Length: 195
Figure 1 (cartoon, rainbow, N blue to C red):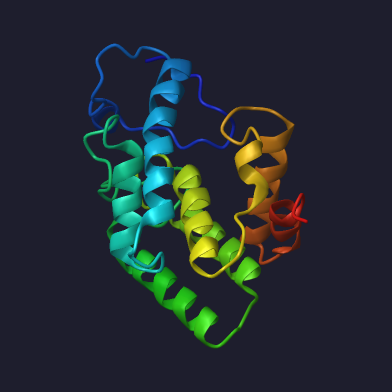
Figure 2 (cartoon, rainbow, N blue to C red; figure 1 turned 45 degrees about the vertical axis):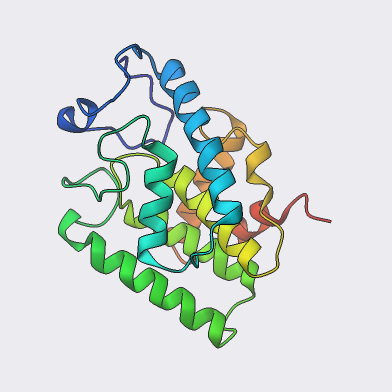
């Protein structure tokens, strides 16, 4: 497969790339199309799933459903460090703390559900628990969390966030602002288009 990754994408290690299940895929566009079909099925599952979004097992199950037809490591935490993310042995602790914080935020109404979802999305992407697909996972997972709490999903599904372009640049800039504890750009981006 060729290395035409969009800006901000996490590169795969050779061992991770070797775990590609379909042998007919040779380019990033072919991979994107193949993964998208898998993700559509995972989105359907997430709409009817009974398991609460704020569980580590739900995050892993959702990733597995998103990529189980594509990657042998779907649903398993990465075993190497990346250009972003926590040191890989700390992933399980990071995800555990993430869901624990999310439960506390909701129980104590620390943030609105929309702001909590935006912050949780940022934290999940910052942890980078899986070798690939963390942004897409974070977006679908937050939609699941919002639905389970009576809120409509964010409007990011209609944007081209997985390919280079203006929408991705704005999204990456908003995530980087959140790295510095400024969540206003991310929340503004995620809430735009809601009625």
